[in-house]
Length: 561
Image 1: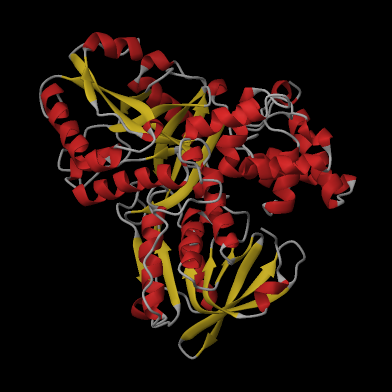
Image 2: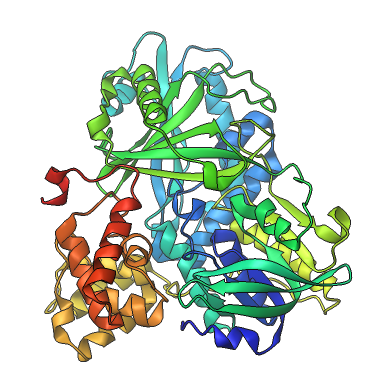
């Protein structure tokens, strides 16, 4: 995947996608497979915003039963299963969750047993897999004593047991987004990060292209297309307003959500913590008197989330404050006093801006929206996608590209993203593939390095290692990680990494648990500086940008560890 800005100006595309998050990536992948000529522009880096700040869960929609929303639940179950089919290296389908049950009423043992029996029934056709490692077990009820072993210190009064069910856990959501971009590029899509759309080109009532600024060179280019798909997430309305006419808000409003990465609160199980409600769920059949947070085991830590709060509709004005961080810590400690979370336990904060159900609300939008702006605003050639969940992006992209084909008056071509592996996903039996890779590379690397390479690059890990023929010294492991130096080189040459922060946070998982320390970041920075001919001033700016990307800034003790 090579960045070629000039190539973007040489043709009229069938489809220009503005926004390179998970929805833009999924749409580019789908459209390119169906034979459309595709361009994808992203103002920053691919998957840099809300797409990288998920709970790392391929969510099956178990909570949708409270709304009797069986359709949405089935969609989520199906999409979780399909991610495991097309990107097996990036997801584990067997992450157990445990929900404590109190009493015998509407949320009691009998009701929850029936609740999850329905859940199992609705997911039965997606739980079985050819590869046993990808099969999803049934849910089951456990005793009060077993619950207290998993959550010691939980209030035992009225506790009647718990229920265990399973969700898919993604090892690296940033890589899944990138893998879809890489897949689209392999199919002929022209993609570019750090390319900001600054204006629309109009012909009558039609939008026929965009003016875009290459944020690397500063050059302004023109990209023409028959259809423009706006997948800019929280920036959707701002993007529409580039037409020069203020668009109506289309009821697209913002809510912010954030999660903590902290010391582990549990070992094997993700635990459910009930706490005071932050927002009312007016669509729930059951009147809830609490909200739920999840403490999910992830890479030896707990990922706790998510807290939803109202925010300004202008994403450039949204931040996470210290008061909000403290308030969430207090909520977790009230719901599960045994957690005893302290501010210094918070290693990293993941946050993003998601669609809200109405202006000024903390409650997230329940359903995605695909807006045809010929109907909405009288503009021909523009469609917007308002996405809600990471897990179901592929399904929403399928529906969006169906509409694109219809508007282009092209012959309908069936979507096949549910069965074609993404870049690196061509693996039939994951455990067998991993063990063979470990055996093959045992003389060069320890098993943990190879597991990391397979989990990151899947069936294409050997392409990364092939660069060692040029310089065997790149086989050295970056301090405090399982990442090897050649991954930095590969990210620059083959994955369009333009900045140090791209490598630290999105091409590798070096910085996704929190700031990894000066030494590790500088090793990456010096590799990039040599490869891209950065001078010392540029290198120092890049190092500082990595630090500035964290809400929790490194203390001297962390920086120099």
